View 1 (cartoon, rainbow, N blue to C red):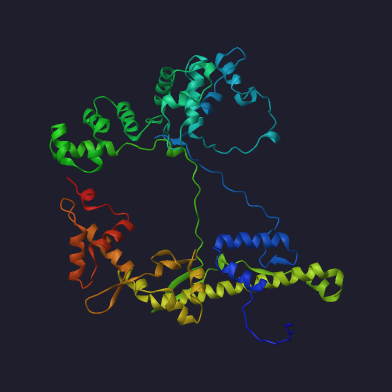
View 2 (view 1 turned 90 degrees about the horizontal axis):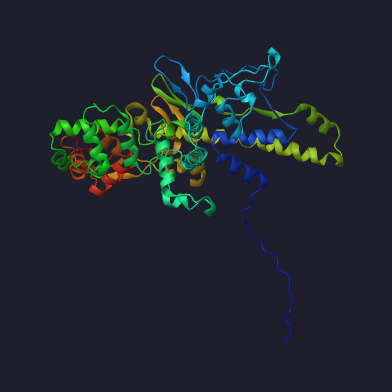
Length: 490
């Protein structure tokens, strides 16, 4: 039977994400720093776009030089010492000096020792305080020792194997297997080289574990230091007892009283379990608040942070050219003009949405700004979404990596949202308020008899807040507060 073909007309609706809408969604979920990076990229690619403020002038303000960098050591007199290699450069050099010859063998040159004769002032560059790494600091001390070349190279290899905290992560047997067989490296040779490394500053560097690191630091203190021998005994084999605060066993082991155990613990606490961390280069993560909240008379008012808003405008020269010449040859510039208009509009819409959400949060959490965390009310994303007639996913994008500067500190917008816990009156308390109450109770507890999670639940129950013990434990761990046995003091 032949199939009959027919034509049918059907109407349907479907959602299409236009490029403009896609860009709007993408800009909304970016943080302020990411937004500035995106705007900077668009400024480089699109000649129709430019900043509205007077940036890019020819005025150059010199930046202040850093006073000290990571890894610098400031003495009591206030001077700053760099690595030992920096001190060597101040010493007189000669071609027949064994130290200079050895330095040249490791890649140094006369210019590194100040031997180059650049005496012109025009060639002098502004000097900045150099920051030495842990490796440079240790190699500088190694250069001062009169060691055979084989031992020096083994010590250098061990220094290169140290991690950022100054530990040697592999055993000497495993480390010896990393060398070629023809070198015939024995673990005993590495052990001797490791002793040299462990004698360097900072004390504790080159240790295989935390116990050895603390023991090296204790051996470096004067012999007549009170409780030094007891502390060595604890870190040598009983560090787990100290970590678990089993003071009863420690008193019996050291044959001392509470005062003696407390002084031994304080001596061990004064040590540095990560001796190489001071030389690590850390980068600060800056937060730029999007919204600023102030109290004006009796009202809390949220305003946008002008410093966080990129001010953009169209380039009038190119725009006038496109206005006068509407030819097909200018299709690329016309497309870039449209992209520039979209970006300006979407950036403005982004900050308008952030301000609307921030004002809704301030209105709902007014008691927090007046009284602090204990007055935080429970709130979910849907409440703000219904309040502003926006989708819940839009509120989620707005509150992620967007920050609010308040008199009580800087908070991410998502901080003001949280689950709720029932009260005996039929109401609800926010999880943030409960965490604040737990923090207050633990801060006021007796250190000799700290509060258990069950006791904290009972105290909150007396205030009308019904919280299970396991919920208290979860909130306490979120606050990074140790359990009751770790908070007990002598």
